[in-house]
Image 1 (cartoon, rainbow over the protein chains, first blue to last red):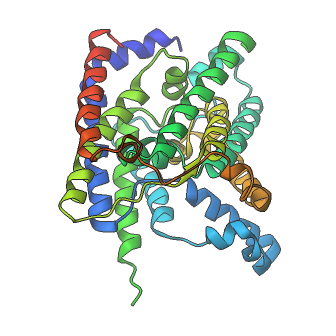
Image 2 (cartoon, each protein chain N blue to C red):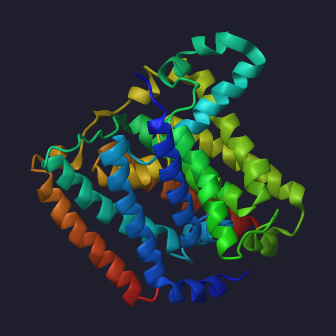
Image 3 (tube, rainbow over the protein chains, first blue to last red):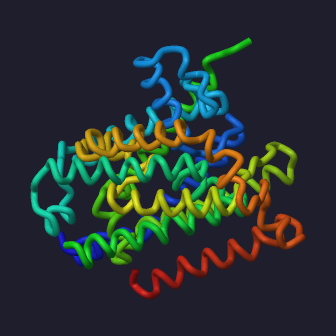
Length: 178
Length: 179
């Protein structure tokens, strides 16, 4: 799909986009007020990685320094991320947008419809993303939204670097490789 | 006594967040990659309007003594290097750790089969090498839990108010420019 097609949709939904942002901001008031927690996601993937590693290697996984600091257990944020899957499912079913899909349109236009290629690149991207999120101690939610609103310098640096790295790779991929 | 109430609240808040991300369109690869290609400004609009709304509310609640904020500690070695690795992966995958949960709920199999597995592998990899990083590169250019107001040696509101005005102005100008 050409960028222009999306441009039209976005233009028609300008206020909707902003309303979504404002609603997320209001949601953050309540996570702080009721749960004393900032919205975040990536720690849960590290906990999950530890839980999965425990299935194979047993209790000694808990001796890893990292898992002493980030315990491989289900906590508030882990349930939050699980809830997100449910929330997006509800929203997409209600709007008729739900559908099984292997290849996004913009990917297909540039790289074709080979599902294996898309999955391999997704996997590689996921490794860099997960590694980077845990290296930086947060993701687009924890640093990009929650950290920047708390005015943390570490979060502002992270958020800027997320987009600098992303803009470079996206242009490399779509302007040079494709 | 331990109770399950916090987990229930976490689930509920997560459902709302996932619902909102899907309604905003950011569970979609095309929207996220469009942002990184600078052709679709959905992601940045949602982030900026969430940050300005959230920022005013949470600082008000802190000023009233209702909550205590917990700005994350970091360093240049931690946040700049980790952030760039995250960014490179962000463009290849087209989802982030939050939006991938939403993408899975939306039915996107590249997110479930490729991305989710990759994120778990990447997280586990970092956990494995963490002892070699902890007191080295992750401490380079240490910032502690520095905040912008403390950096500028001013009251929190002396940053919150002008930054809010700036963000609203940026959102307005983006709309004016037809982005």
